[in-house]
Amino acid sequence: MRDTPWALGSAYAESVIRQTRVRRGVAQTPVVRYENRKTGRTVMLIASMHIGTNAYYKELNDIIAGLEAGGAIICYEGIRPAAEEEWAAAAAGEHAVRGFPKTISDRGLPAACRYLGWVEQGAGLKYSPSWRNADITDLELGRQAQPRNISELSDEFGDLFAGLTPEQFDLIHGAGAAC
Image (cartoon, rainbow, N blue to C red):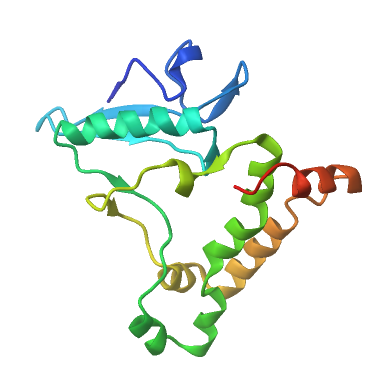
């Protein structure tokens, strides 16, 4: 494995980073290059945040565009909805997870964006039809994790702002324009 000499948010990066962080008011996410010593094939792993500044997503888009222009295959993760025919064949209990990823993004992310003046990943990242979603569907997630576990996780995200005072909660939910 070899690290790239830069990281997303690199204007302030002092070294290659291994985890997402905020340094000097700038969000930084790791960009790591892995190389198979036998074949020479490489994989670039670019961590990304679900929300960020327009500048963050501009830099991310530029990095990805450069990689794709050089022949890279771009894969991304993101739980996607199962096809209707899959849901039609699903067991009754499995329907509890339908739309699960959407409930998280509908609750906390827009509020955080309003508060921070940031944008959601879907608005900032320029997804290309040539990219491949390498993640599982919501139905596959439910089958692997079991509906009870997913419901508990969803409840935890529902409590995302539980420790805030009423003033802080109002500020976050009412700040700025919607993402």
